[in-house]
Image 1 (cartoon, rainbow, N blue to C red):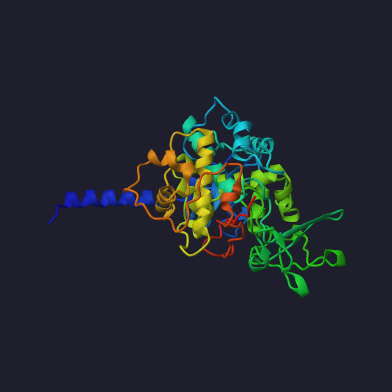
Image 2 (image 1 turned 45 degrees about the vertical axis):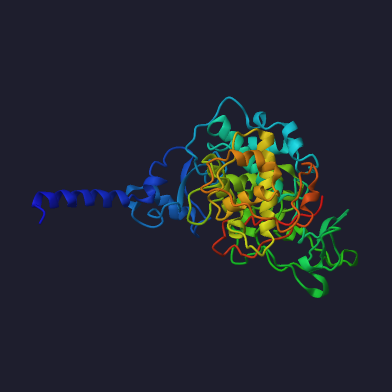
Length: 458
């Protein structure tokens, strides 16, 4: 039986641990939020609450009451900056020797994507990076060592070249299966996958014909200020535009990581535009202006956190995990991918683009494939079967080393030989299409930049 002194010591230690574990959210957010231009405000992306609810959290007496006692609901805002919760810190130091576009040059961009089209310009990418880096303490492509910066560039470029068909597609194909430009603006013909001619990239049968409506990417439960107003969209009421919709009424995938859903357009607009309404009223800006085509991808990279986790694609890449960044971008569909589905093939294109970017940027090793269930095995299989020739040199010296020796597997068809990086014909049977099957209200509500993984022959 323990002595009284031993028992007393145990109780004291237990009391200390308990008190430490009960540190209030106020201590982590608004405890020191005082002075000019500093206000304790609400994070409306987590729960419906107002700035007024959080205003009391600067007082010591409120530290154990809602919402001050829930970590993350309130945060300290410097009103001289955009009203958006700062990006999660990576804890790495900011590099001061080079700017991001000194490390990733225009020649590198043109080598990776020689067929890139507007709005995917190199100058637009650099401007979007500078715009965000001027406003936030956590910098894009400027944290950590030179090698970490290159690694982050390679990961970001690998994902975005895949998502945007090597920077040739600014809109998701199926919702805008056919585009009509006129003096009145741009109109889209939404199409189902079954009715889309992937070989010729053409849609004849409209999803809004005969009085039908287009309602994808609209979570009606999410209303202002938490999401853009959305609802059923019908065809334009003019004979010459039969079967077409006004794309500024819908929130399908656009930009380098395919911004989608009405809630995400509001969040990105809060960071990138003059008001939260900008991208709600004009979502086509993401498909037509470099600032938003690149900016929305950078916003997702820096700010989007998976449910229940304090990490971002930016942090994952700096910490050495390509798989972790993919899990945030499209983990619900690719981590792991359905063996019978088209995302198995999409992973091949994503890995190839990543290896291409890594080669051009000049990284020493690839990032870890862990963090995305099944990705390490798919990487080994892709190299061993000859489908990822651009990854061969990296596979010989991976980082970290594979947990087991690769198991050579016989290809189910003739391996795809090496092709010019400027030629996407090797993706002929991997068509770019909408892969979204989940609403904003699901468990994946934060990860709603759902990939459009099938690409057409370019």
